[in-house]
Image (tube, rainbow, N blue to C red; front, side, top):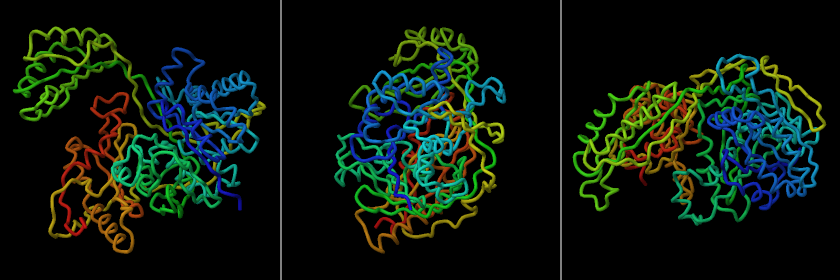
Length: 580
């Protein structure tokens, strides 16, 4: 059997730590270095770039990182695989060749294309329309000798799946192995979110010795021939790799217990985790089945223009002040959509002016710029001497900004030409799978009715007393992963029994009805709850909470990044026996 492939990550989004590529190359041994630069919002940003300059459309930060680190990568024999090509992988590949030539280097650069469906005219008015491709194109490029492979819109995990396919010689029917690689890719794709970043248990990591001032190390997946892997990081780097930091990423922005990928359908309920050593978490047992028949497409459209103003309300009579300014401004507005934020009274007898103040935000959207330009900001500013006492705004009037609308679509695979352009210019078409599976969308769905938690002596405490959370967005839907903590301070059968009891309690308590109760903003929305007993948790989907997606949302937290922390802060009845 081939040796495990050591795959590092140096980027979780467009704008991640610039020095991460060099840090990963210098920090220790690697076989492959990957970077994820794309998200639904990023595709919109790159689409706007191409409107200004058709030769752009890729992540320019990646080029500057390569200028700094390409020589080191070639010297150490580390392959580089990234989706930084965005809307123009061919343009990025050519730019890399130019940079390499200027450095006196001659790497073999290949790119993967075929995801851009705009030329087909399938989605009228689309600014971007990109199918999510799998990892076999990347694998073909590496097998043919590429040093660098850049892609358009492959799935985030595919930059890990592709190298693993090439190294281990997997085929399209190596479903368990492919599924294991998808899980490995999903864990490391968001960079330091696997090593303690955006982690609700950060205080425990600090208590355990993590230096909060040290930058978090980027993750590494050691992928074995059977698809199992070990998640780790370079020795001496910041952060930590624990059962909880890995679980946090596993439940991030998933949907049901079946994780659909272009190459395989991954059963998330089959994952087994083990703390294999300091900063080492082993993932095994992952099962896969054939992939879905159709491919998902990320479609972005220009939705129109938006603007906002924020009023500062201070001291007494907050509700009345808000009511007055709303009543004054609203009749003067002509924008299609006008949204006012909710407010809460400040702390009584506050000892600072800021503590005695709240913000009232008015957001407007329209298909045209004029109704959200001076026609909006002018009437707001004119109230400065004619409204509530203490009137002030947080910023001067702003210009309208365009916003995009995201929607997912699906296409037949026959409409997508998954193509590798090798370093020598040769074009290779990647064949579609021949086996497909139909996934039951209700599989793993929490049954209803579900036995309620047994009556016992209980206390009202925050849900986060022993429950972690990580939340995010999937288009207009919000996703919250909840799981009970793996307490590193406790070991043995009694600790495992306590964790199992807590996990059972969590699965029983978290129902769609309970989510609507704890998160009143979801009161009128569809809520789905999926149980992940192997991870001691549940996954919650709130349909439509984010409207038409992050770029069009007027919500306070448009990507739902803090939604899980809000949920953890809500009080629930917790049985005394679970607080041991």
